[in-house]
Amino acid sequence: MIKRLIAIFLAVIQIFSFFTPALAQTGGDLPVYIVQPGDSLNLIAVRFGISAEDLIAANDLADPNVLNVGTALRIPGLEGFSGTLTTDVAGLGATLTGLSRQYQFSRDLIVDLNRITSPAEIYVGSTLVLPLLEETTAMQPAAPIHTGDSFLETAVKQNKNPWAILETNAAPGSAALLPLERLVSAVGAETGSILGSDLVQSVDINPLPLRQGKTEVITVKTTGPASLSGELNGKPLNFFQVADNEYAAIQGVHSLAQPGLTGIKVQVEAPAADPFTIEQSILVESEFYPQDPPLYVDPETLDEAFTQPEDEIVRETTTPVTPERYWTEIFKIPVDEPWCIKSGYGNRRSYNGSPFTYFHSGVDYGVCANLNIYAPAPGRVVFSGELTVRGIATIIDHGWGIYSGMYHQSKTLVKVGDFVEAGQLIGEIGGTGRVTGPHLHWEVFANGIQVEPLDWLDHLYPEDFLPAP
Image 1: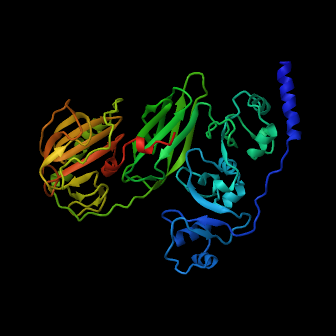
Image 2 (image 1 turned 90 degrees about the horizontal axis):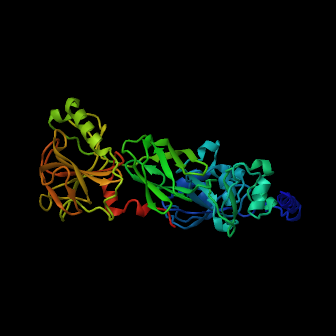
Image 3 (image 1 turned 180 degrees about the vertical axis):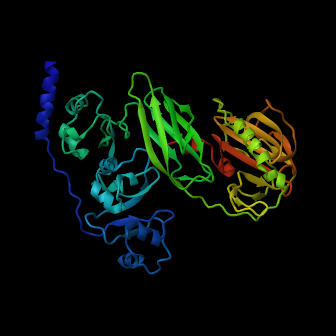
């Protein structure tokens, strides 16, 4: 006990021995913004609250229509900062205080740069203007103050200068730093979690921002074995272990999801550790989906007396989450080459003169080679039969809440319970159900939501979207 008190006393003495005043962020030359992919002159002008004419004049742009990624643009009208600016997408747990500490940049300047009127505007997926880290002191997550420990006890245990902790984290005093709060330290020091947890190292959502019709991967890295749960846009998340102390959930965003802010919540529990919960608003952006030409079909296939019971069959079939993952490679195209797509996923549709309130829930492959239909990935057949709208249908469970639906077949070559391999012949293209001609309609469900199937032909989920080690 005496040794502990002496250590705390010596730590207090250090407060007065190692004081170093913080560098001020003052004006001078105009700040510079590095042009990012997708930027335009007007977009940059709006982002900084200036006119495009002022931006052109400040940079002597001979041709404002030519703007290359990586170009350094001088930004007029910003007071109190001179340096290089870029943009970054806010991740889960991002706050004004946390960003200020991470970038060693004052809250007021972050507010001014981003025209923020409320801290609630820092939501997951928001694009923020921030200083390049090369222009600042590099910072990394630090171990938090543990529940039940005082600030000075934490400094002693970590063998750190208490004043340096306060200064680095822009805290006016020890009372400003709360248990489990997100702290930072200089690179090379002991690392911790930017989320302020001893249990959770990181939570990543990829890609950001969320977009209608896309497949999302939510990855959680922990310090030990844990149980996880959560919710995204009102749908429960199902987490599976992908590596030691690393878990991932694969979740679809509906093609008709309301653009704007929705919610995400992640909960982590483990024995002998403080439970972790984080909940924050997250942005859903619109994806461009064109309108198909108006279609005219058998009215019976639009009658809710038939469509609703059929939708419920499909919903019940694709809801169970098999804990085993059957696929290890990118999905394969379910037809032979040369293949042709007659209608894309998400296209807005009108049937028999209705408004364009329907959406196309999959990809339509026409008959451009032969009638063969193949399994896009390994899995177990969980439905095989004829439906009013979908015609002769086969649904395959690929595990982890991922399903394929193959519709409008002339015949199926598999039955419920069969296990199929990627590339296995499973049926023939036909014109059964709600169709205007023979084709294969292929759907991919990610935890009960139909998503863009073509993404599964380009990416291996979840590996392509896991954060770097």
